[in-house]
Image (cartoon, rainbow, N blue to C red; front, side, top):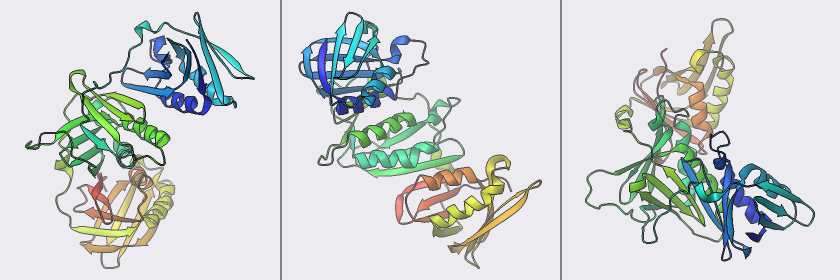
Length: 383
């Protein structure tokens, strides 16, 4: 195998592949990237058996062949050199990479047993399409609310509820929940007469990688869409975008009936500036960060049109911060985790926030003003 590649293009693709490499897996070959050069194209593959990435780039192929190369060392070398052209050649078990002034030699592992991620067949049609902006929106607003441990695997995933014209994305960890509705750019490939949406549970990590891919490989003058395929027999979902394929194992299990925890009505509705809540949260968090659960109390006063945040810790003292709000309904006193509220605020860009509350024991529903497609729910803490 022998080829010459553009440094910038090769670097970008290697960085995408390297992100999913698991150097701690017990299989040495999974620390490597599979590389195949043939007919003017370089095909590169990385997988950790849960996620897989395939990429294709145009390359000046001098001699066909394939191998697997250590991902970390190869990507660091290509990222570091300044020359425009990268020369690569397989000599026996050594992979030689060089520029005019620099070179490196990598040990290889035979590619025969490399676990190749699945791809859609030629005649397969996408289940649905997403714009790059929609992918980034889902990742930004939903992924952070999922669990980050494997005690309950279903809670590490994003639930996709797919209908013909709409898709709903849900992430939750048992104490908070984010839901984002998306209007699809074209009808999904689902049964028009179906009485229930198609449900797919994909890891939040997969959406993080997909968001990074669409951000890095989007072209300014292109209207390319993300194609989403469901490979039911393999229990895999595949996302295709601009010469990159990301495959992810569908998470097995039943997702909790999340709609049951979303209050159907509210007694108090408060509208306020995001910056006001963030500033008050910073002040009370000086004390709240020392309290178990990061508890902050919210005192919503409809008559004065104010929301007071406060935190009290016996050994340190207490602090309060008040800001104005447009409040409709009853006064209410309840508590939330300052961390959870802060996480929500850091993942939205809107300037006006709506908080809907019912009782101190029921979840608070945070919304973006004039945006009915998104909500974030936070379970209250005991006063």
